[in-house]
Image (cartoon, rainbow, N blue to C red; front, side, top):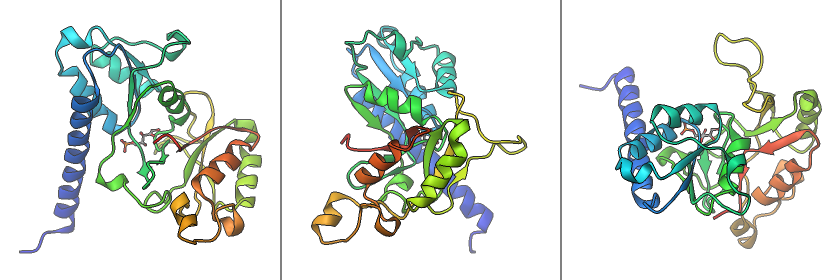
Length: 253
Ligand code: 5RP
């Protein structure tokens, strides 16, 4: 007997959940060392399992650690798990987080990431770049040869509301196909407003090239015909006035 569409969708969803959970538990087992004191906690549904895994560890060990959120969702996760909450701004400036765990929307062959599907990218980048070690916890759906291949919604970009329309125009000029201001949750009118009081633009681009593409003779990468490399696009985007942060996490591998 063949499986109904509803059954196979259910099975696929169960596989995704078990993969996220397995990745999260493995990441915590491999990368959370008992001697660590400062731990960054990212955002998204995979991170829920990261916090669950941490909460199951020996409290004698985790009670010596402080956990740093990347937004309201992870702040609540930390509190609900009974872990000690702290904030990046309270971390001494000469001290790095020992490790930060976070999810991703897409991961390419060079371990560049698209992040911000949950609209938390700016605080996520601050926490990630404040950590000695960044652990990206991602299931099989997230892996792709080039960013923009699987994640078609576009690169999440956090913008000042007053600049959003001008940024949209400039994104079109540099080759983004139909960039849009992200709208609110179902049943909620208006755009999504981030934890930082900003808007999110999702800007789709053709798949982003890597250094190995250039080496193998692939042409383009500097924006000609809208084709960009990861590095060149990241550089171009961050120079657009009104953009506060971009959801490209690159060059950290
Ligand atoms: C939120 C993020 C998340 O890490 C990313 O969207 C992945 O989420 P999930 O684990 O739910 O797939 O960047 O801004």
